[in-house]
Length: 226
Length: 226
DNA sequence: CTCAATCGTTACAATTTTGTCACTCCCTAA
DNA sequence: TTAGGGAGTGACAAAATTGTAACGATTGAG
Image (cartoon, protein in one colour):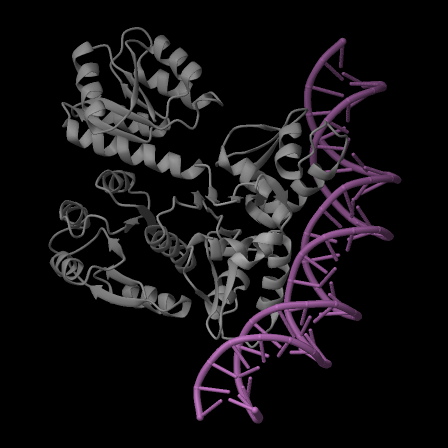
């Protein structure tokens, strides 16, 4: 559940955004009314996105943004700036300071939701846990590791790529030529037994589960559950 | 066989993309030179992906994108936007309107192919994005490949894991012990120069971009943009 | 400035990975 | 039933990867 930090000194606006967020999806909303509050909240709660008004009592929005982008912990949190209409300079400064998007007040809630959704999605997709779990298999793309019933199994990178191709679309037969292209980068339909050999090695390492890699004679291979 | 719709008023560019697509794999390519053509093509042929230039005669790219995302039939088609270099606002508006990726002109055909493959693949197999794109870097976790400005670079699996750890949290210093654990599985703080050597090899392969891996003396390493 | 700690770099040998070959085995179409 | 093509298997040598040791360079605290 993504966490959004809203920084604005007007309670009305915070409520408006918060309401729209809740209507849209399950977001956790944190609010802050001034710059210092915003910085502590950002550091302590690590929100997934910050909506930052530039007009703030105390430390202004630009300084907050600058501070955020300087902190190692808060650096990568996307920031959407809310600027007063026409204040082009603010907007430019904000972008220069690392804001990821901006919107002029008064803004359309719909548009803000759109931008929030996009930014949250984008940053999530850059570090989402890339784990494929099917039956007894657990493939972790981040550490290139396979676990079978929790038992770690060492795969070479070629074996990992090959298994990935197969397990990604369970039940779908992957043609030899496609596998040779995706795993080895072979572009022509080269006559080679390399694929067969690697399938053999893979099956061997999968032990009892080896037969889950099925042969489609004349076509290629597929990974089948059960 | 995936269908790609290319929308650009320059025939040269359409041909360039089309050619590269055909070299890569069996794609069906449809072309459109202006916005209206694009919308009709998208509705009638339901392509698997749309490459959309923002600079178009008649209806501009942003409006095309908006229209696409409003139509129930075309809503879920991934869109890659081509923007003029440095037009940050276009890019932001585009992402806000629901584009799935963007690329600045002039672009490297190889990089575009990578992103097309990623998006087509993603929508075919309901999985999250496995491509990390930061600056000139494009890491594809599915094929364990790194591309720098579209140029493919061979990494060993250890190098890939190491780069992944660093690039996943840009600007954040990763401690030596953490890296040794995540990449090598070393649980104790072993005294070893292995990490240093691998960092060296990685920097070497990154060429001009090697210095983006910064040393944090006494702590570890971090990946820094710029 | 000095020195100790840390990092960069090179070289090298052990190990692992990889593709190919030469079979054998099995499936299937005729 | 049989012949032919595809797939399984084991062995092997070339190539790539990897960790370590040795030494030089750099850093920063005092």
